[in-house]
Amino acid sequence: MKKLLLGLLLGVPFLAHAQSIPQMDRRVTLDGPTGLNWGLSTKADVNNGRLANATMTAPTISGASIEGGTVANAALTGVSLSANSFTCQNAAACVVSSLIQYSPGWAQSVERTLLLRLEDTVSAKDFGAVSDYNTASGSGTDNIPALQLAVTSVCANGGGSIFVPAGSYAISVTNGVSMACPGLHLYGAGVEGTKFYLTGAGSAAVFNFNAAPTDSGMYFYGGEIDHLSVYGANNGKQTGAAFRFAHCRGCSAHDVRTFFVFQGVQNYAGNSNSVYNSQFHQMLLGGIGLETYGSDTGCTGSASALQNCATRSDVFKIINTDVTASLNSSINTPPAIGVYIHDFMATVWMDGVVLEQVSTGVKVNCPNSSTIGTCPGFIYGNRVEVESNATNQNGVPPGALDADNFSELEFVSPQFYGSVPTNNLVVLNQTRFQSGMVKFFGGKIQGANQACIVSYVSDLTYVGGTIAGCGLTAADSADAIQLLNPGNSSLDGNGAQISNMSFCTVGAGDTAGNPNAMTGLRLDTKTDWVTLSGSNGRGCGQLYSIATGNTSAHLNLSGGNNAPS
Figure 1 (cartoon, rainbow, N blue to C red):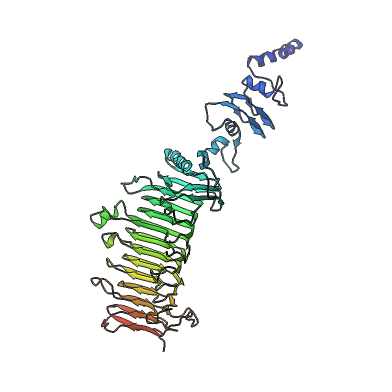
Figure 2: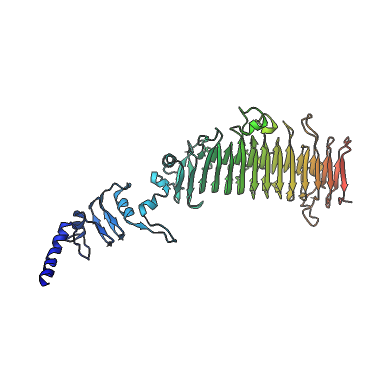
């Protein structure tokens, strides 16, 4: 037995030598006959080991396999790495990220290397983006090339997300960033974290979602930008949009903020695009907060054929979004328009939208379409608040809503107020084609130099609202609502259904400081088919007035109203 034990003891070193497994000291060091450098030089496999507080200087690691081990507080200098399983931008990062295991804390998670975890996110800084913009000098590295490289790389993989870390980034407006593939998502670290500062001059959109349409030549699918800010130079030389969607279906800009840009968002053609939870501050003079439109150029055929027109725009949503305009009385340019809807734009939804100090809150028109069927269709607003400012406007255009040639408008609880009053707050027109119906429910309209609402359309409904403070500077047109003859004599005369209104006061007999006695409803000579019922004229000079020469037999103006004595 003693001889057998002796033989086994003598044989162990030879077995170890034969299998080329170095015996390392439990106290790992770099140097010495059993140190780490010696161990690596013999191509050892180290399983479930631990390397802590070590410094590796200029080692060469080739074909190493490290499984289940941990590396803590290691400093790597001048590492040369050779491995076939992954690539890195620098060797030190490769060593660390391939050794460290990422273990999520939630149940049934799968452990991965840090390298694989980091590859889940594409950062603009991976492509050379630099956050070095200096607000004092107004200069910094132009990040257009880096961002375009990032977009090209992500698009090569069929789309995906690009993260822009917190920082201040210069970006030129000469060309902008072409977001040229479907499914592209650019996001930052929040509006106070990721900030883009526009430099130079130009009219290009800064972030332009302009992929080639793939769905029957009509749309590309998906695009998103969020959690970042864009700052213009406020010099009048940057006239492009901060964000633009063209032929997109399902694009969105949300949780974004701009300052001093000429245009916040431009949406052309496409379907089901949106802007929400965003703020567009200090829009430049003469600019536009949000514009959405389409075109019927080259689109012919029946109404159903027009539905498949490649340049038709349908369903644009604006939700929980604010627009404020810059003011400058020394420059003869009016403040920005809040929302501009025009031409072949089928459906627009606005909900919780605030438009402050704008020249016109919502503008709707159809200057280019060939028929009313390709003019703005259904425009809906819920709790849209407009505070208009008539600086440099000479009384026009309307302060809150300027609508001409459309199919249907509907506003629920509008809050329209003339902060610096213009002539009218709402004008409803039909200069080229017969406009459709207009409906208001509830809300308050207050503050105009002449009539608060002027309607030339054939079908106006207003139920349960308050209109006051009209005719502040014009006693002869101090009307809550004027129903006027259409300028185009070939179109139908106007009409209205008005009920449960409160005219001339904003509560408890308060006439809002109006020096002129108001009229609730004024009817022109061709006004026809009008019903006025259940309305209160407290504080008015008269509840209604009918122009001489109006011989309509379809006026019902005495349905339970409370007229002034």
